[in-house]
Structures are given as structure tokens and as C-alpha cells.
Length: 174
Image (cartoon, rainbow, N blue to C red):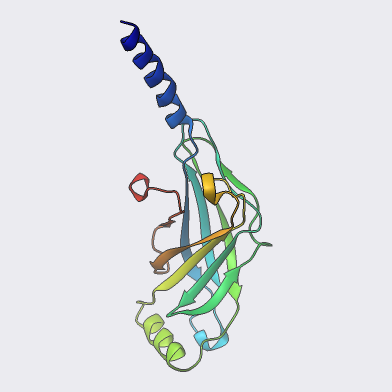
């Protein structure tokens, strides 16, 4: 009887801890591109989101976060720390902010040619990389001390937001 009681106490203590544990997920979408001419450089209107899948902990994106947009390995634009303010989602909620990734480089050569053709045919895929500063919420345990970056993958303009996995996240949650 004592063993059953102890087992019930342990289970009742661990289950709420898991439900209240921080579980943040980060998302990015490219809402639109400024102008169809890549020879002048492109700026991107982005939506950055954070969601808390926890029942007891909010999830935040800290100032200092950067979002880069590239095409075929060439960085085209970046939304830097000045564009990213503190953004928090309450437990079981999602919060988002819009920002502009401004031109950092005008593509040349074959990258420019392929980007121009892809944009003309509405098939351009852009790679997005999210950089979060050290101590960002949602990065727990050994990762908390380090800043980290994650590749959000390829996305087209106007697609739904894509999850950017963190080192401690389980992709099936999103």
C-alpha cells in the first residue's frame, strides 16, 4: 500500500512539472517582397512568431534577435536587432510581430540570373535563418548560455509560417 501511495505521489508531482515546463516554438513567414527587380536589391516583409505550448510558462523572443533571408547561399537581406523588440506569448498562446529585412547585398552572376527567372515565374524559394541571443527563452538546459541559430528552411513569399527548430525542440509539437 505504501509503495502504491509513493508511486501516485511521484506521478502527481511529475505530470504537472512536465505540463508547466517551458516549450517555446519559433516561426517565420515571408509576407511580401519589395519590388520585383533583384538587380536593385530586395527587402522582405517578414512575420516573426513565438508560441508557448506550455500550460504554465510564457515564451519570449528577446531583443538582439536577427533574421536573415538568402537565396542559393547568398544573403540578400537582414532584419537586425533594431527591428526586433521583446515579443512574448502567454501559455498556450502565440504572438507575432511584423518586421522588414532590409537589403544587405545585391546578387550577381548566376545567382542574380536564377533569382530573376525564379521571381518572374513565381517559384523563388528563399532560405531564412533565425539568430537568437544567449539567454533566449525556450532554449533550456545546456543551450541557455549560448546564442544559437537555426535554419528555418526554404519558403516562398506568401506561404504560411514555417517552424524554426530550436536545439531542444521536438518538431512533432508544431
